[in-house]
Length: 202
Image 1 (cartoon, rainbow, N blue to C red):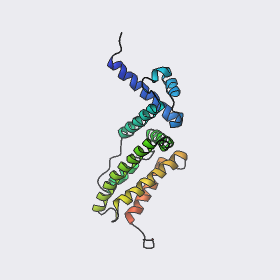
Image 2 (cartoon, rainbow, N blue to C red):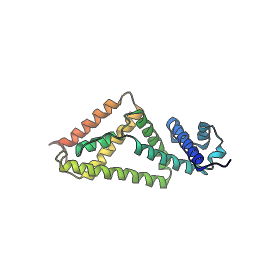
Image 3 (spheres, rainbow, N blue to C red):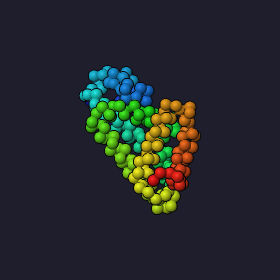
Image 4 (tube, one colour):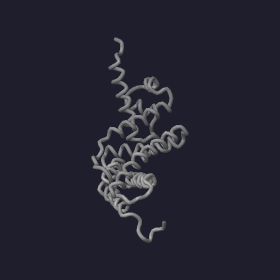
């Protein structure tokens, strides 16, 4: 009996789930056709129909990570500074699912840095994230919740802070519990809202 389109789509979903489980367990360093085949209980020959080369497997994994990250539930935030806070909280590894996604993202950096095309794509991803954050910062400034200043520069600083906190939390989860991450973020935002101190350099 010939395979139907539904059979093919179901198989692709199975393959994607196997790729995700390998990523969650071993990161991009452990992502190979052999590992995915073993997770799927299939032959590597079957997987070559989906991924003729390793780069195809990596591209699929990155797309899968993008879609999973986008579909992850986000905290609702009001306008202004509350929206900035909600956006930054959405990046942090505060749940098991968010921790898996962040661990995979961090493990993908080495792969991306070794590939000029992927490096450019990652740079664009982070630039888009900064642009969205910049718009939220500008609204908070208009509402008087953040002091005047270049919103793009503030957004870049906030993105850098939260990505650094992600790395700290992944390497030392006991020291950077979800509650502590939220506290540190709130401290950071309070400092932004207070503005530079009188003795800060211009």
